[in-house]
Amino acid sequence: MTVRIRIPAPLRSVTDGQAELTAHSDNVGQLLGELEARFPQIGPRLRDEDGALRRFVNLYVNGEDVRFLRGLDTDLKAGDEVSIIPAVAGG
Amino acid sequence: MDAVSSRSANGVGTGGATVRGLQCRECGQMYPTEPIHVCELCFGPLEVAYDYDAIGNRISREQIAQGPSSLWRYKLLLPIEGDRIVDSQAGFTPLVRAHNLGRALGLRNLYVKNDTVNPTFSFKDRPVSIASTKAVEFGFDTLACASTGNLAGAVAAHAAIAGLKACIFIPADLEPSKIVGAQAYNPTLVAVDGNYDDVNRVCSEIAEEYRWAFVNINMRPYYSEGSKTLAYEVSEQLGWRIPDHAIVPIASGSLFTKVWKGFGELVKLGLTSPGTPRMTGAQALGCSPVVTAYDGHTLNVEPVKPKTIAKSLAIGNPADGYYSLRIIKESGGVACAVDDGEIVEGIKLLARTEGIFAETAGGVTIGVLKKLAESGVIDPDELVVAYVTGNGLKTQEALTGALIEPIQVRPSLRAIEEALALRAEPAAAVA
Image (cartoon, rainbow over all chains, first blue to last red):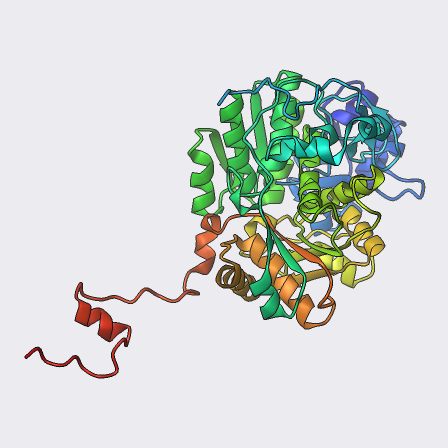
């Protein structure tokens, strides 16, 4: 199945400038693994030394924060859109 | 007033290298002062780094006292690198010695920082003064934001002053007064069908595609510095003292962390005697992820879906929650939440004791103050400053049914006397 991934500006230097990618993963964790395999430099940007997602990295599936879903185990289906968005303060 | 003032606000020339650049709060990586907000290496937030030796050589209590009666008196402590400022004359709001409220709560040394009286009636005029000034410096033509309401009005007004276009994104369910309070300045206003966190997410994506100055996104490192002036003013108004205890509302946690930073800078520069305030964070129970983390003894803030009348604090995913918790811990403060009923009571208590009509966020601050005073967490002799950050006229809906209704009378002396029970006996008949 094909899902789309929105890449935020701070990561585009390691995705050859691409702002949107496609992948074929069953869940969010696998998707990150697929991204890391394609762009090895992306891993250390998103994960800390222990492999956990960094504190200021937010992941969304179709606009919903994965922490309200099943985190990295959140299932993906064809046509889903995954966004990687840095935390921003408000408003 | 000049659209964009070119005078040097402080009587002090600018352009001195008081700003070292932007620095990642997580990994320390330095960046030039550009409209960026995220560390490319670790996604950490970028923050303005200053050369405090250079500032220390130029700043003094006397030099500040000679400045204007606005936040621009602290210009040397703000990340302004050009000579032009966008000046709404925000800041230098009253610090009220709250005798009446103190008496009601058993606190002998209580002050209220009344930030309801800024140009657009909330503290947001402070960060937006800086963000709009930087937007002009960087050559943007559009000022934008994601807003829970107060920011919308502040951004629209400052765009008007600076001659910039304004594009403002709000959650569709915002209070009508806040919508009008932004519309009046004629921005492009976009009501997004979602909550604030949805609006913020969408705006983060827009900010990457269009060259707009989103005050709380790509301008955030500069924007957030404006909130430091709430610490500077309180200290100066106390006669250059650091309060024992500050009660500050937490939405994203940006204000909270910057008030702490501001007090720390004054001590570092020798403008006040050494000391640190206890920093207490106030949240609405219906959106209290920081309080939940505090109560659970963790620094890991889990996001929530907000459900509270305190919409200006309704950020379920607070970006500076982690840093706020660290400050609470380090400073010996607490995090505390109050429910909607306590918020309304807080608004009413402040209004009837001090004559200050606060919006719901102010009700949160006063509600938390009351709770902590009653439970003994606040010592009766502590010098406490409660930060009241927005005006009650913005959230009048919150008080529906909670106030005493007007007494309806016919236009006659007798009717009014009867209605108000002014005479015990019926009036004697005229002979």
